[in-house]
Image 1 (tube, rainbow, N blue to C red):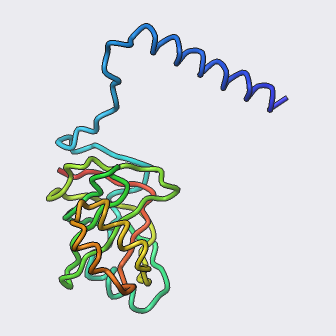
Image 2: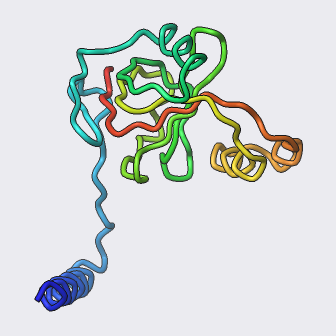
Length: 168
């Protein structure tokens, strides 16, 4: 029964999309835009944004545990320019933490660098392989020369966010 219902739903969506695209063929496809100026802009799973851990405390906890579940506030320094599927944030120790999103379920606005976010998720420190580092460099728009210089894995701070609140 579930298979039949799912099949009907899929066919209905396909039919509606075909009809809509033929009716609006001269129109540009509209995509949802997140207004980063809104203080209450929130992406992903809901969480209590008021219960946050200071980044300095998170970094020290990551030295003692394999992973740390936390809500943290940080300044975004870089966002994936291909899809918005990752970002980097500043850490108080002068390093950066790469933020990815649970189940590839959130895409950040590409113009978010310089803004403050509050995130809920799991932080850890682990090795990133060369192939992944090169992929991130490509996403960031690095030159061929810069990508070619990536030859060794790197220990990185990572945060897998299930929810993000845009703070400014």
